Length: 225
Image 1: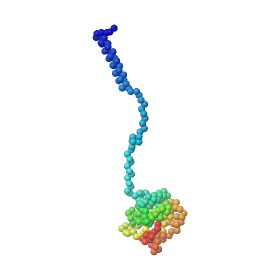
Image 2: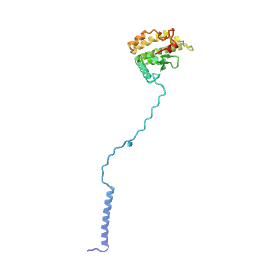
Image 3: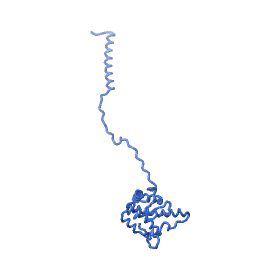
Image 4: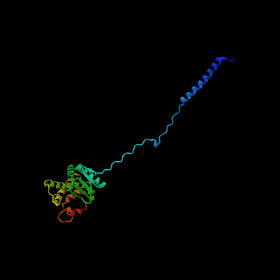
């Protein structure tokens, strides 16, 4: 039977609205809640990793190295050898090391070996033949030449304003005195028997290379140590 009138039309419209509402609701649900998917792990590339800024370059050292307040000037091998010798003295003969700290301000690699006691600070110049003969020999020579510098300073302190004569800190008799001290130090720091025997044989005239009875500039220039 066909329905007529406003009621039939109303029922028909209600049915259409319900159908449209159901389609709209399912469409919204599908958009709002998508099907769950397993995320894919992607390893980062090198470019994606954070990078640290480069470390600043170390500043160049402008001052010479030192040990116990004593400046050391020379090439890397000489510096290492000198530090080894001073370390040995500090460990085995602290008294000698203290004397060196007091009367030697600079140890410098040079052509010959000799103590420049009148300089400020006093400077021990060392030839390679001396520095690299052995650690114990080198260490004992530092103590030897510190004694020359000590004698110079002692005369200067007791004779203010006067020129220090060469005989106050050099010459054969002074060499004998310094060798005697060097021998004592050599024994305390464990020098070889050959080094001890050699020091025991010296009479102080080794510095007079031209055999003219003194130890002067000409002798220094002729040194091969």
